[in-house]
Length: 122
Image 1 (cartoon, rainbow, N blue to C red):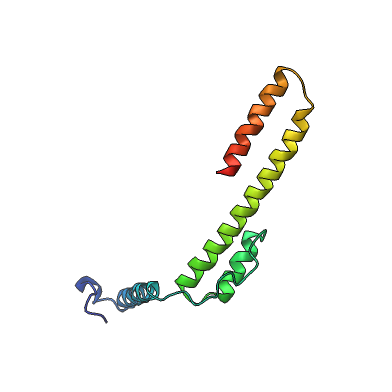
Image 2: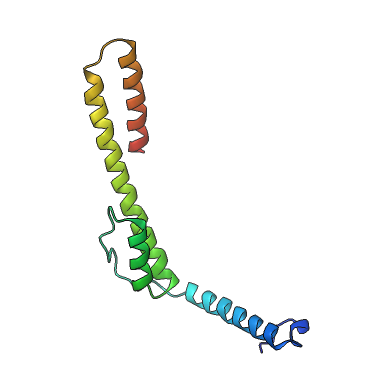
């Protein structure tokens, strides 16, 4: 039993065991927080990968919280870039479509497309 356990739990073996397990988990997590990532940069081809598949790969290949964080960040950044490229492509198609329109409806559609393009470029 650790010295940090509350005294009122020392009378119950089950409570003492639960406290010890929780204490060990917290201590281990704190130590793992300081471990640097060991996974190589871009160890997977993340772009366009489904989140469920990425989760399974991360669970299989990560050895520490640092590895998990690094791999999750790489997946997120890769898929954000894909989403931005898809949005830019969609906006370009809309602009081509609206270019043939005339009148007030065309102006409203073009300004809406321009707003979406501005958002995509941020």
